[in-house]
Structure formats: structure tokens, C-alpha cells
Length: 233
Image 1 (cartoon, rainbow, N blue to C red):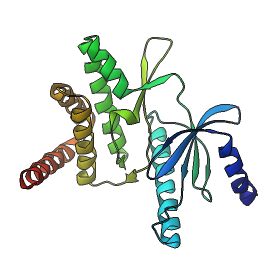
Image 2: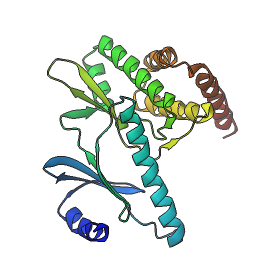
Image 3: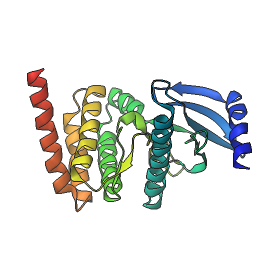
């Protein structure tokens, strides 16, 4: 039965819309069981030994699904996992219909000079990342493009975390500090002159987590290492 499903997946994907291809995976838009769906397919890397490639790809698929499920159990908004095929390394995920990236939202809001709304957003991101780290989920690729905002009928906005492809489970403050450092670098390069906004995000993160002091300390250490590398060149 499982083999039949795996054989059917290439045919299914051939009819789906390819919306993105990266170094690790292809991302498709399709309909699955009558629902708008995003399918992530990890494809073989020809430069790696086939056995090693299979092991690494399987492990990353497992880690991604585990991270999403752990976040959802903790009440963090992330796409529903509809189906996983470990033979073809495909994950079928809920498409967050009617959403926009936090990256686009920040850019458009800054143009309209609604700083109060961005302050709320920074605080919300900080709270959600603190909750994620409390669950020992390290995202691995935190950017404002990997966060979605969906406005609801009651005027509230729901914030989703997406693309857990580089995620893993770790209780180490060092790993969580690096996670925040990756976000900081991406945030400040994508959205120039937002240092104050990012400080607000970190303040919210610190207030929301009992484990935050150790993580922020590691973030400061990682920043220092980053500056030293920049000076050395």
C-alpha cells in the first residue's frame, strides 16, 4: 500500500504547480483531499553517496515534521501536516490561504508609517519564538520570509511559522542563541534601520521565557564571535 502511494506521488506532483525550487527541495502548490496544500519534496543530491544521501534526507524530513508537530502541540501556529511519505521524502502541508509574509508586511507598513502596528508585531514574534525555544525547537532558518501573517474577520492577525526544513530539537542555549542571531542578521539586512524594532522583539522574547537569560547571553557571545570574524575578514 505504501509503495503504491509512493509510486502515485510523482504523477500527483506532475500535475501540481511548482512554486519554488531551492538547493534542498522543491515546493509545489496543489489540492489534496479537497484542501489547498503545499507539498515539499526533498530530491536526491547526486554529489552525495546514495546511502548517505538517503539517511540525511530521511533524517531531515523526520526532524521537520517533528518540529512542526511539537510547535502545534504547544499552541504555536504552524501549517497542519496532512500526510508524509518517507519513501519519496514528501511532506503535504496546509497552505495558509490569505496570508502574506512578515517581510512584505513590514515593508508595506513602514511605507505607510504605522510604527505602532510594527511594535505589536515585533512583540508577538518575540513571544512566539520564546515559546518555540521553550519547547526546545530550533528553527534553523529564521527570517521574516518564513513567518506569515493572516488577518482574521475579527480584526486580529494570526502569526504562523513556516519552513522548518533546517530545524532540530535542542535544549542548548547556544543553539537557541544562534537561532536568534540568524534572525537578527536577516532582519536588519532585509529591513534597514530597524534596530529599535529588533530590540523590542528581543525584550518581548526575554519577558516571555524563563530560560531567556541564558539564551540572550549566548546571543551576545555569538555576536562577538561574528564581529571578530568580520574584523579578521
